[in-house]
Image 1 (cartoon, rainbow, N blue to C red):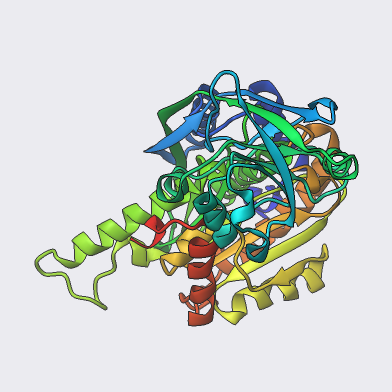
Image 2 (spheres, helix red, strand yellow):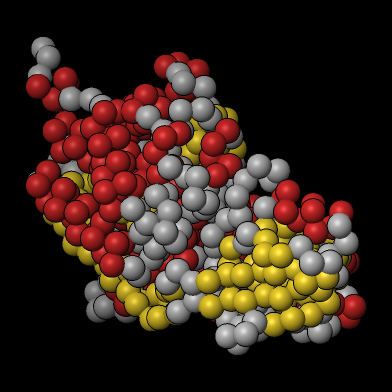
Length: 449
């Protein structure tokens, strides 16, 4: 016998309306900004109107405002070159800094040496990890990064304040590949860099809407996506699209119900260093430690809030009309296998890997919670973090395609399952990858506290 709940399914048009509201009507939603707070308020109202139990988790962030980045090539006289500032790196004096350019090739450790001291280093693809740290010790006057991608505008990203405090910073700007090629071809020898951007301490927030399970309320599944964007851009695919999928899934399962607790989370300040999900897992870890010290607590019999979390589904970068569906799993082998089997059964095609994904599922897996990240790659997703990440490249159909797949996955393996078919564990080899990700890529240590 069919029920009303049987007719409730994911609708791409509904999801697209949420996407459009976030990306176009609100616009850029940098962590800690008024626009991010407006988006958070609107998402919470939506969750509450669905009937979810809502709350916000507030946490501190270091944020910034739109600044000025100016790159002028003085010798030979090439004039002003379009560029983007590497935010939270270092502001120059008002007059800028002027110095000799030295091209060092790709930003590998072996290419960074004392020859850059007091000069402006021109680097293909930027400096990361140990190469960046060594460069800071060499004290260049500034850095010009050439984008690797041929047809992509310079991205808008930032230095992590923890890294700046640890190893220092210099003024940094980014130029498109074609502009960098011109600098090398024409033998640019001297430049003036000016970077000016206001910084501020602010707060961001996770928005949580909870649907209590009807049979196993103490088994919690997080379904989340970050709603912030890079500075001053629509962030349509990254990640208004993912947030829109989460919001539409919330509507579906409020109408359908779930045997297990579904905790829908719109993560804040992901672009500033996964701040929202890091704060979330920190709170769970602190609560876990405190609960174990309570009189009468018996390990194995009593479960902490952290232990009640059995799975995280992370949804990041969605909606591109052209692209490839991907899923990245951190957990038992059955987790990735379930996606492969479901894709073969119902479609669409998915590329499935067991690997770290630089998004909000990874901090939860660092805390021992298996995670599965759904994303879309290729084609116009190369525009992430640029002014070209706009709704013109997105549509309802791909949202319906991935959203419908995730809906089926949740219904089959979570909401309606007799037992969760995935063991609650993150294998040691995956934990090692997670530690390397935090230590070598993000290079900050507060995740493992």
